[in-house]
Length: 205
Image (cartoon, rainbow, N blue to C red; front, top):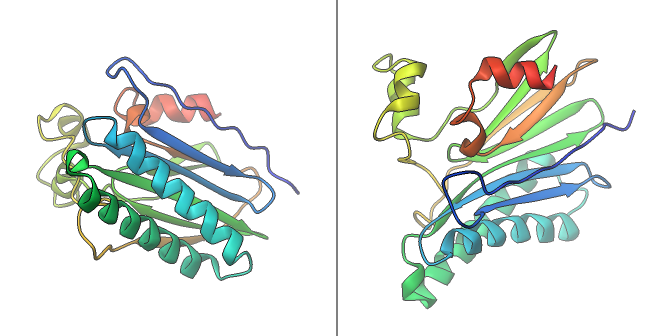
């Protein structure tokens, strides 16, 4: 059965320009959210490069295994961003997080770098599928911060892994079987930093 898909991006209350980019490819069942960072509009540039690299990799390798395809696409986007930084000094420090989902038959494959998240609402329960590549995320996993403390911590915006940080990029990939009634969400931290998981779950329900 064909899934129902909806994509939305909003500048929010904290910025004048929107540094998020979306990919919604219903024909190939590939979806992504990239959240750029960096001054001089460089965040917009980085997230656009990442999404463009993902889309172009789909065109080149539409039948590739989903996990390999996501890693190759992310690494290509990372290479392009790093090259752009070298070519334009004012873009130094730009980068982007990204989370992407590929659906094949009754399975999803999710790849991510950074603190953009994937959730699934299953049987009324909201589950976060990805681990944030962020300073506070690491502290939470080590038991040094609670989720509530992480939300308000002054270092909550420090990302420990992102496209554009370095030439070598480590990509986290997971696979999951789809169950009837599952609702998947991809989002940047602009959503989950404003509202909690309980509210996200209520909205998805």
